[in-house]
Length: 108
Length: 120
Image 1 (tube, rainbow over the protein chains, first blue to last red):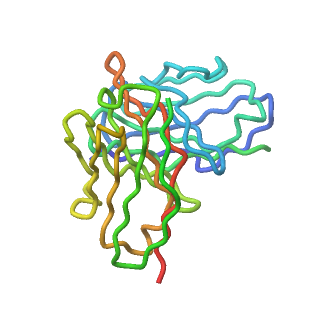
Image 2: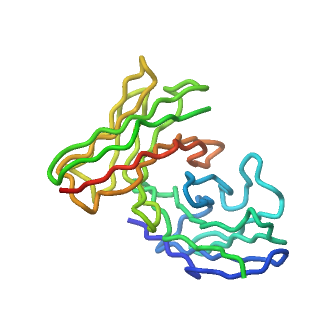
Image 3: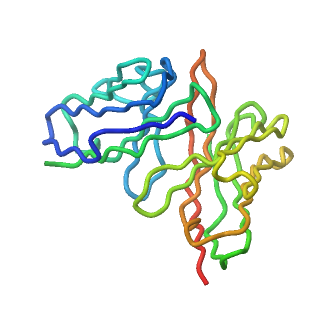
């Protein structure tokens, strides 16, 4: 079973600045990785799939990179609506379609 | 596309619960359905998935023997059945549509979530 980890657990960034979130897989997931955003009281929302492809309606300030076991989600010029919890998920070898524990992106 | 889930449930320990997920706006049998849960203040936990066309399902090892995912294609609805409930099964349960696209796979639409509370 592939185990996903994320760092940091909480990231404090000021609006307008850049945020960099990390995700690591316990074994290679090649490029089969997605990112989800979740706001309080809401269902998760797909942000990125295939490491770097933005989902429909996701603004260009969101970008993803990486391959194998190390991945990054970058949000340039943070907007107020970007503060949320972000989860990475691998779909290279499933079940299980495992999620990371999440990174809470909070306003500094 | 919409996934509409059934309402909140309260059960006693040892009981079972069924959560439904009704799909609309797309061809139900083309896309998978996944179930993911989230305890209060915790992360997302993937439970299992269903191929609505064939009825084939797969589960996370943690839930093997306690969870069953089924569907009724005639009413475009998928079901999550969880048995032998414990207090740590208290969570919001989500269904999500699984989509394969050019070698990628994702859960692109999600239900609104169903609160299941297990309490004596």
